[in-house]
Structures are given as C-alpha cells and as structure tokens.
Image 1 (cartoon, helix red, strand yellow):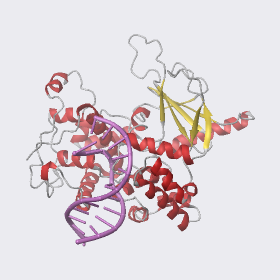
Image 2 (cartoon, rainbow, N blue to C red):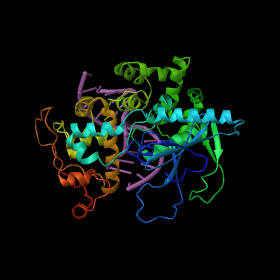
Image 3 (cartoon, chains in turn brown, blue, purple):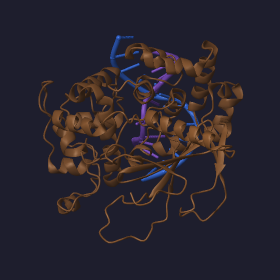
Image 4 (tube, rainbow, N blue to C red):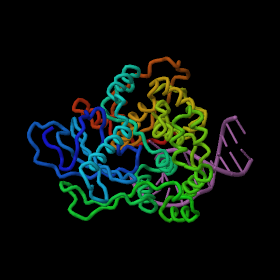
Length: 404
DNA sequence: TATTGACCTCTA
DNA sequence: AGAGGTCAAT
C-alpha cells in the first residue's frame, strides 16, 4: 500500500482474513480502545478501506499494542514506557509483538476457507452471514477472558466494557502512557494511561468485592473476587493452570471452569472457545437461541408464555448440538460470525421476535435449514443493499406486538 | 433431576 | 423491560 503510518511495521493481510473493526468491538474482548483517525482528502473512486479509519490499542503487561488496517495490510507497533536502548532491543521487541499478533489473531487459520466451507454446509450462513467477512475468534488470555465473561452475565456489551476497563484502571499494571495518534480527531495532546489486565493475586482481597460494588459491578463483584481467591488458593500459579486447560479435552476443561464462581454453562463455553482453543464449542445465549429457533429448525420449545422461551440446560444442549452438526469442527467460529451479524441487525432494526414460531413439530436433523425469505435477509442484513432498499423501507422496525 | 426467583445496574 | 446468566432453594 501507498504509505505506512509513521512508526508502524506492516504485515500483508487481506481484510477478509481479519476485520479489526468487526472483531475488536463485537464482544469477544472488552479492552480494545478504538480511536477515529482524521479522514484524509478523499480521492474520487477510491475503494473502501483504502486508508485506515481507526487506530486500535490494547495494553498488555509490558507494552501497548497499536493497530491499524487497510484493505490488504495490517499495521502494527508497540509502545513502551522507556525508550529502547539499542537497535537490537528494538528489533527484538518488534519480533515479540509480531509473534503475539500471530498468536492472538490465530493468523495461521485460513478464515476465507472456513467461510466457504460454512457457506457450502449451511444455506442460512450463505444467505445471511457471508457478507460479514473477516470475523474470527481471538485467542485470549484465559484469566482475562474468565473475569470478563463473569462480568457479562445478564449485562450489555457496552456496560461490560466499562466494567472491565475500570477493573484494569483500579487493579491493573500501568503498561505505558501515550498520547493519541497525531492524525486522530482527538484535539487533546494529553497522554492516556493504559493499564494491563490485573493478575489474579491482585483481586483476592475482601476489599476488592466492596470496591467493585462501588464501581458498579453489582452482584458480579463477589463472583470476581471469589473466583480470583479460589484460583489462588488452589493453584500455585493460577494463570499457568488456566492456560494448562488448553491441553485437556473439552469436557474436562469445562468441568474445571464450572467450579468457578459466576461461571455457568454459557460463560464456560465462551471461555473454552475464546481462550482455551475449543473451536467447536458454541456458547448459546439468548440471541443464538433465537437464531437457532428461527433458522435452524429446532422444535418448538416447551413453553412460550407471552412469547418468551425459557433457556433450560436441555434446550441449551439441543441448540448447541444442532449448530455443531450444522457447522462442523469450527462451529464456534461460525457462531461468532452469525452473532456479530445478529448484533448489527438488531442495532438497525430492533429485536423482532419471530411471529412465525417454529411451525414444524418435527424437523429431521439432516434437513436443509429453511431457506431465508427476503425479510429474513433483512433481519440479518447490515446495511440494506440498493436492491433491497425498497422492501426494507416497507418493513420498518417491527414493533413487537404482545402475543396473547 | 428439573423449575423458579432473586440478583446489581444501566439503557432503550 | 431486558441485557451474550448464575446460584440456591424448592
């Protein structure tokens, strides 16, 4: 590409393999900050994503990773509190950062290939999710991931982010302070302090739960503190223990996670998928459940008083099994694509519960999923394409009518 | 073993 | 009301 941002290294990477905008803000990690960059003079006929629109930053323990991306390149750099002494040292750090990136984004996994596999296996995916490209599963730190998703229960993504951020500011190590990018829209030149995620031992004290309550964690405050305490009590090196779960079979790893306070089936599955390498685990939340009911021919569930569908362990299992057999070995990854697509559509159209409750009393496991109708496509669609614009307009936000 | 409520707080 | 649930008591 034309120019490399000052101070950045570049890595060739098609945006279809990784979309930072989609991945970093879709509720996998809650710690990335995204900083809008000043738009340069826009040339005519310039393709989308010709230039980076944002810089993304994440504090690790010893450095702050800064990322940008355009159509076919990932730009990266790391900031440190001190100035590097030598060329050698600087080169070494660059190498470490690149290594971290490859691991964190799991760049060895060919996402484009996966998309085509899913599309081939699943009509619904092909029709609805294929246009949300570049969405992959991050390989996160297990402790951070665990604490973050303990915070996620009965909560909004937005609020989860605030909670995790305040947790780091309060208990995390200061990684580095640095000012906003020179080419950002930010007018202030003041340095921003970036804090890494706290280690388990920093969260064990009784005072932590009290403080977290004050910070608005609600009933999750005790979960966080007790989980940290439990991990430190039971394990010499809690973080290594959690990382070690990667080597266990799924069921065993899940059993370990379920011992932790505030970790139930759904949160455990999130951790398994997002930090313990269990790529075929599909966390079933309310959104995924709705999607499964509507598009994947699950039998009408027990009850629905007032249209509500209860989430029981049995249903959880059924949904999970169905989606795994639909998507295969990387089912958890596919789920993440659909979940993100789902979030976008809800943001645009609001949650429209299916009037058409699953009608089929019995749907063979092997049956082809119902072909999405046009309105289904809108339901999932991000931005209405020109083709569909008119009918989208005629199908405005469906105000949920209470079904009695 | 399966079903219910309660649970903190914020936002739409 | 409901949010990417979990826990504890029937």
